Amino acid sequence: MAAIQQEPSAAPTTANAPADAVVDPHAKSTDDGTRNGSQADEKTRSESALFTPLSISNGRIELAHRIIMAPMTRNRGVPLYLTRPNRAWAHDELGALYYGQRATPGGLIITEGIYPTVEASASPCVPGLFDDKQVPGWTAVVNAVHGKGGYIFAQLWHAGRTCLPHFTGKPAMSSSSTPLDGDQEARYPPPDDDSGSPGTGQRVKLRDFPPQEMTYSDIKRTIDAYVSTAKRAMDQCGFDGIEIHGGNGYLLEQFLSTNVNKRTDEYGGTIEGYCRFPVELMTALADAIGGENVAIRLSPFGLFNQSYGEQRPEIWSYLCRALKQKISNMSYIHFIEPRFEQIIDTTSKDSYLKSLGGNISIKPFQEIMGSTPFVVSGGYNDTNIWGVIESGNADAISIGRYFTSNPDLVARLREGKELRKYDRDRFYWIDEPRERGYTDFEPFS
Ligand SMILES: Cc1cc2nc3c(=O)[nH]c(=O)nc-3n(C[C@H](O)[C@H](O)[C@H](O)COP(=O)(O)O)c2cc1C
Figure 1 (tube, protein in one colour):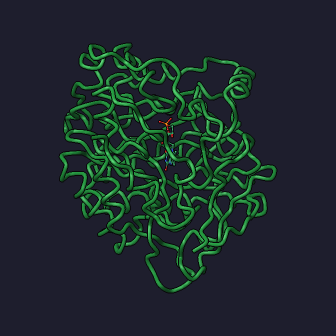
Figure 2 (tube, helix red, strand yellow):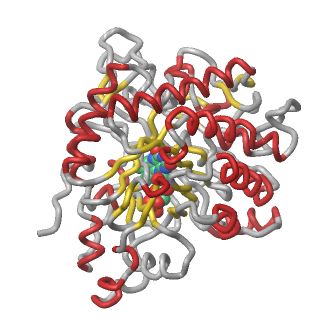
């Protein structure tokens, strides 16, 4: 079956860049799989704080080590319905195999972004959790991870203005009706493709599908959808917690970004206003499932999906202070490093961020969060991961790409084994077989 949904060799501009779940988000990132520097010696590894316990979820969960699997959309779900258009996908046994392969005793895995409502959807074959029929697939994933003594959080993701009517059946929604600029394309098929697979490769320009500004009832409905999906995840699937995707230019960041959020009501206009929707969402989730069971991921210095907002240190500091004050027992907070970028090269990113002025560092957010466990992500590998915990700059490190090609990543790091380079062309499902580049990486012997 022909199944094309991303640009494996996307140019380092936003021109070919649809949502990060479907484009190659790392075409020009800080780490292309070639590692500079040397691996750690045995003493460094055996004494590393990476392999010491960490308490999260306000003491409810004791992790045995501090290497976390980062959330990664892999587009390997199967269509939930035979009727067309199908707008929902679920995991089959392949998902359980994939996550189980990567689980470790006392280790934490964060799932791929999961849609809490069909309205949140931006790409095919992403297993959602808005329908009870999606529960068995996710329950099998959870059981596979728990079976190996691991923990697993569900990441909930709403794509906001990068959603397409092809998937949602209605116009996209965002903080404001600000369309994506330029030629940013999504290579999305119509979901009535017979196979329900990633499809035919039809290309559309996101600017041709501008979002509508969310009304108060849209905001309430969206928060309710997150809450009911979080309850389904905890009560029916047995997840250990929920991480909200608040980064990478998706819905929450579209509220936080001044170039997207043009509202003049209480959900925009001021620093408090930009933060209101994320804070209300997190508070509603904490009320529903317990503050210790919720976490959030943020990318205050990300540019992905045209996040070109200003006042970043001020806005994200306010957000952290509000979260800390309202959910003092939050499970953890997860930051993407400023140096990490998905589409443009680091030099261009640095000069852009410098042009904004202010302090380009996530350290101030860590200081605001105090005792809330601080997880960092972006560009870590077997040469630069050592000493980070000891430096006090993080409590845990999440790794994405190397987990795709090294299911036994934790053991490899601990034992100083070579890391296998990841297969960028298979990050997202392009062609059969689904297993290739997903579950067919052998552990080292
Ligand atoms: C294939 C792929 C899919 C991704 N999907 C998500 C996602 O669903 N949610 C999210 O927050 N980040 C997503 N990311 C970003 C990763 O979680 C991570 O932040 C990024 O890869 C940087 O970490 P690394 O250098 O260790 O790969 C994705 C990255 C990749 C490579």
